[in-house]
Image 1 (tube, one colour):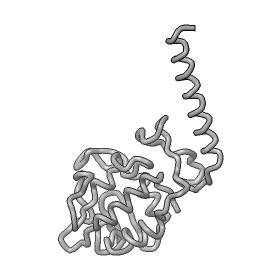
Image 2 (cartoon, one colour; image 1 turned 120 degrees about the vertical axis):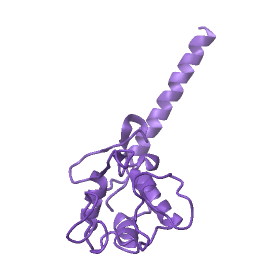
Image 3 (cartoon, one colour; image 1 turned 180 degrees about the vertical axis):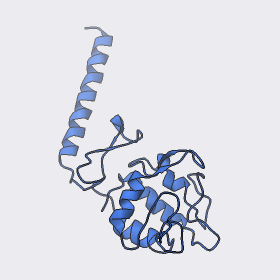
Length: 182
């Protein structure tokens, strides 16, 4: 047997062991509800191999508590009647109602930032914070946005309460976890 054959077999064996470990670790993960009911795995922009996103069972960020209540329906005021996405004339093709975390989740998961003011793309790309337009579309008050700028920064207007870097990090962590509806 030549040295090349030994190296090829060793590489194949290492790959087989890695695959076995990966399959075994997946079999023990807790299943968490994500996406819309009966939606199946969430397609991703390539954050994971094969382009599919698996929700992290250890995600500490709750959409309902840490995202919706603490940010969207809270200080940012996105659901308020006097602001863009609430009331009788919501703006930007996104409707956010006070107290309706499920409705907000559905809006966020399905929303696509348009080409103009763009760049166009999914507002939430589960497991892929850098490809989620929500993050670059967010105005923060205490730092430069590390995700850059896209669209019209939200919350919009001089009277709006901008998010903090910590709140932006919470959004990014939730997305990186797979954006579960938890």
